[in-house]
Length: 467
Image (cartoon, rainbow, N blue to C red; front, side, top):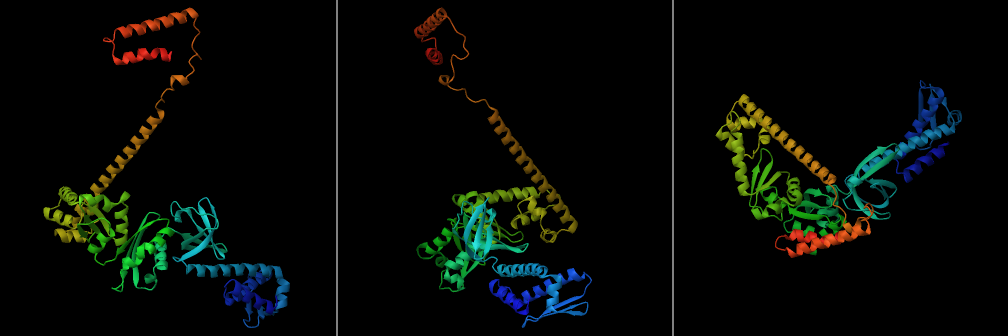
């Protein structure tokens, strides 16, 4: 390894692998030190320096100078080469780690290489990334050669390689698509304040505009909805609600629950709960299918939203006051104050700050601790009862399934059953007598219609057919 070759290696790796030349020189020096140490022993004091301009190697082993030819000749060029290759691979991995760490939460476009057991491999230039099953939108399928867009979710070292994990389920994907499709966002005129998402189903995006002349919602929708259509198309038809942001929760929460109409918002600041009152005909729409609308709204605004009608709220208030008054030491005034602050269950009271409860009820710390302990016990008891009911219900369902599986199946129609397979043979005389008796029975039934009911008539009439 002559000086010119060292310089050539450093320059080549810098251009092709995007590795800093200084890292290459340092790796070669470390590799040569490791190789010489194998020859001279672990206790040897070794110094290796490569001139960055000329590539000349200066080496001292235990204070004695060694020339470059001696180093390569005595320790073996192959050993030095193996160590250098290993160091260069590590340097390349570290360089790629730094490069891809800067891409985390950014959107990338790649080509699907293959899909095996739900894991999709995506080619991103000279890097292979993976899209795990859990980071894929439900219902999507990927085929070799398909173009795909995703955000870089995680980057980590795996031996001498870099593992890049992609995601199509994170809210950042929605944000990056908005930035690509809506120029006002990339220009900073419109800002995305919050995103809540259930991948493949529905997302809510809260936006605001720094320019009063620009309608933030209209700009995101686009003319005839063309902008939002491009985004929903990329997200497998995922529905996107665009919400106008407000710093006032009483304004933001009704917007977040659209298209439902909200009558009133009651904020319980101490526990971060918002009680939203709606009319009876708006209740199901405010909650949404499987609770999706209120769940996404809660994530968007950062409040625990509870949807109810005015009548339901009154019932809960009456029930809560009655329950609180069962606690020893509780007063009417404190029970009323708790309800006004949004505490509607034992579980709520069990997690209240003691100082806040002391201030609300004018009580001592001992009195407050006693009330909280009682509430905690009753909350745990209620939880145990609920778990027991859930267990019993599950057992009942299993028993019903087992009973249904063990129930005898309906017999096959007579036409399908082999009529003569096991029946004993009968003589010609017995067959004639049997036919005569059947005919006689039929005539008797026909003559006595008043004495026979409809069921017997049916049975008698069908007997010759079944025979």
